[in-house]
Amino acid sequence: MAIGVNALAFVAVAQVLALAGVVMVLVWCIYFMGGLAWEAPKKSLIFNIHPVLMLIGLVIIGGEAIMTFKALPLKKEVKKIIHMVLHAIALVLGIIGIYAAFKFHNEESIVNLYSLHSWLGMGIIVLYGIQWIYGFLIFLFPGGSSAVRSESLPWHVILGLILFSLAVGNAVMGFLEKLVFLETYGLAKFGAEAYLVNFTAVVTVLYGVFVVFSVLSQPVVVVEEESAYTAL
Image (cartoon, rainbow, N blue to C red; front, side):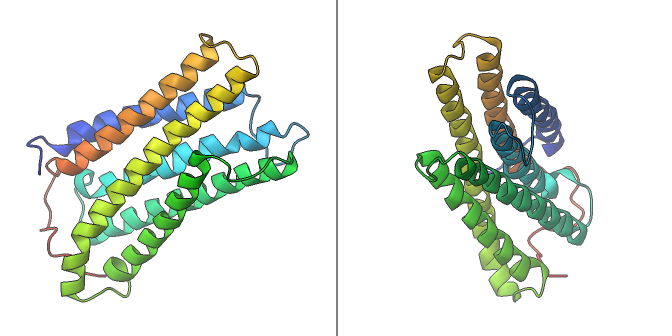
């Protein structure tokens, strides 16, 4: 299924939403929750790294990687490299973000992996890594046969969108989980911070929607036929 709209329109909206999401999560974690730190007497500053890196990494940079093939009027080989590099950055940031959550839990003597959010997060990051490795080996280097690439491409795209959608949904679940926790300890349900967290989650969902729309839309410029997928 394809939408008869140029991808540029969806990509442009996605960029605005991405910028808004980054600003909002930074304002929340730095202004409302006290800042970011890898080592600090106040251990919550360590945890604050987690939502920042997960949103910027798996969701936003991961989304930018997905939009590469429809948004950039470049040769296929160049777009493949950009796509893989962005996904690699997203994966690394995601791993660091997850480690920050474990580090916070361990230093505060809080049990790990007790929630659905954490279970899904671990599953997503593992599958994200497998997807990246498979894509690198089949589509970039050393590259599979033309038959393997042709058969793999639809599944690579579909699984990539599924993982991205799961990352968006799990990010929203994480915002909700943290907000409920804060409200349990006295945060005003209709205060500025609560509204900020909820709107950040809304922006995250909208960004995900426009990334998917961009995939279903018409490419900005068709330089080469994408079905002729070859390794470098």
